[in-house]
Structures are given as C-alpha cells and as structure tokens.
Amino acid sequence: MVAQRGPIKTSCPAAVACALSPIEAAVFHRFGAMAADWVTGPIESSGSGWVCELTVEGVAQSLADALNNSAQRQLREQRAQAYAGEYYDWSAIAHKTLAAYKALFASSAH
Image (cartoon, rainbow, N blue to C red; front, side):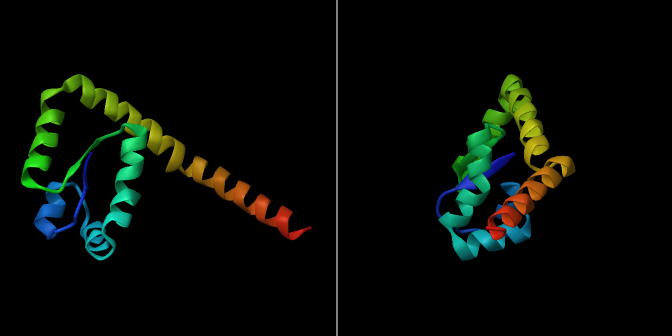
C-alpha cells in the first residue's frame, strides 16, 4: 500500500492514486495532518507499505520504488498480512473486545 503524508490538497483522483477511499480523502481534507497520522502511522510502524508526500513526484517515486523492488514488495506484503492478522482478524478483535470489557467491569466493581 502507498499512503500519503503531508499537506492535504486532494480530490478523488488524487486519493485513488494514493490508494485512499473517498471517505479517507474527505477525512484528510477535513482534518489534515491528524488524519494523515491515523492512516500512515500503522503503515510506517509495521513497515507494511510505502508512505509518501502527496505530490506527483512523491507518489511517482513511491510507486517506482514498489514496482522496482520485488523483495521489498514481498517483505511488506508479509508484514501487512501479519499486521492485519494481529489487529483486524475477527479472533483478535474478539479477544481485544473481551479484554476491554473485562477491564471495564473490573474497574467499575471497585
């Protein structure tokens, strides 16, 4: 995945070029850098994609980097799968939700 970072001056075509949904593009447009960190933070921290400036040059460079380095694509694919399994798998979501409820009930019992 290639995600954007930096000042947000986007329209839907720019959002599509950066692999953003129209909803994400609207969030970026409204909330700027705060929203950018919400999307790009996990990508950077997990090493599961490329993060770039929202410029023609930035997107072009990230796409070129991704296309020209199959080893990095495979590595980032593996990292993305691991990240998704840890944070977005239904089993992981259920365990985290259960832990949150247990913590909530434990704190309200005191």
